[in-house]
Amino acid sequence: MKSSFLIADDSTGKRDFLHFLVKKEMPGANILLATTTEESINVIDAHPDIQFAFIDYEIPLKNGPFIIKYLKGKNPNAHIALVTSADSDDYREKAQLAGSEAFVCTSNHEDQVLRELSDLLLQWRRSL
Image 1 (tube, rainbow, N blue to C red):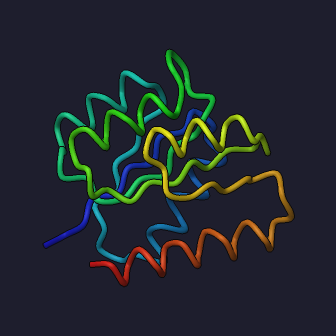
Image 2 (tube, rainbow, N blue to C red; image 1 turned 45 degrees about the vertical axis):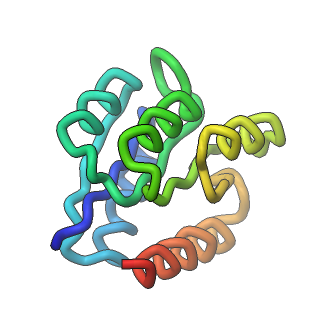
């Protein structure tokens, strides 16, 4: 069965980077994209079996933890990471309370971000 992967981020550059990385690390995954909370909810409703997600914190209309909680309500087993440029303990805590299992700050050094995301995708791929 083909795994579904949601990338919810309003930043074109970051969304494209995450899309490229997921495509490389999880070949064959059905990658679903959203740029707002409303789009994210629509994608989740259409694909309630989403297994993996990268969610931005500052996404138009609501915020990342809202989307995380919504996805977890549809699929409690979904693997979710908050991927944001803000290195905020408050963001990390709110995402974790909503159901995120990982937090990746994209404003860290590029090599560190790539390593963290690649390691996370490898871990998730092994869970299939």
